[in-house]
Amino acid sequence: MKDYDIKIKGKSEVTLTGTGDNTIIVPSEAKLDSTANKADIDIRDVSRVTLGIPKDAEKVEISLEDSSLVIRDLTFERLEIDGKGHIVIDIENTNGPVDINMVSGTADLKVHEGFPFGTSLKGKNNRIECDIPTDCTCRNVIELNGKDSVLNITRAR
Image 1 (cartoon, helix red, strand yellow):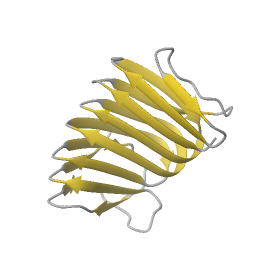
Image 2 (cartoon, rainbow, N blue to C red):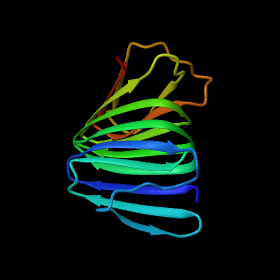
Image 3 (cartoon, rainbow, N blue to C red):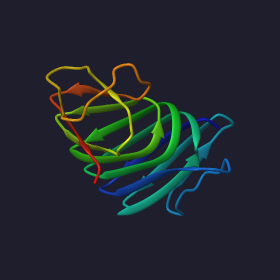
Image 4 (tube, rainbow, N blue to C red):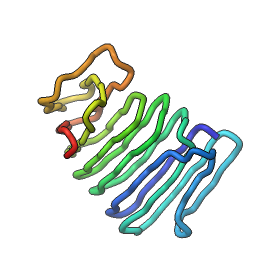
């Protein structure tokens, strides 16, 4: 299984980690539907949740609102974050492009020392604020898409 569609309903502190043994870890409250190539994970009204998926994924899509998201130890072809309201994202030891899609929202992205990345701005009336040097030639492209949204990129402390 290489494609993961994760939906978080309600404000939550979410941790998404890569597992080294090709397993999926979900809380008992989650609804999990899977086929040979795709897993749909739905979680409602859980204030804190930890999820694990195999560390090498093709596509990961996660939807959340007014929540925080920590992503650790994952490699992906594409990570898509569909956010509403204000979201805080902390990425560590990841590899791959990240698309952040928002309408009239704000995302705060924390990147760790030694994480090379470039940025891409798409959509209408969006803005990326970043004081960290970027590398437009690397694979880790952080893209903001949508409308009337702001992405603040800072160094994790």
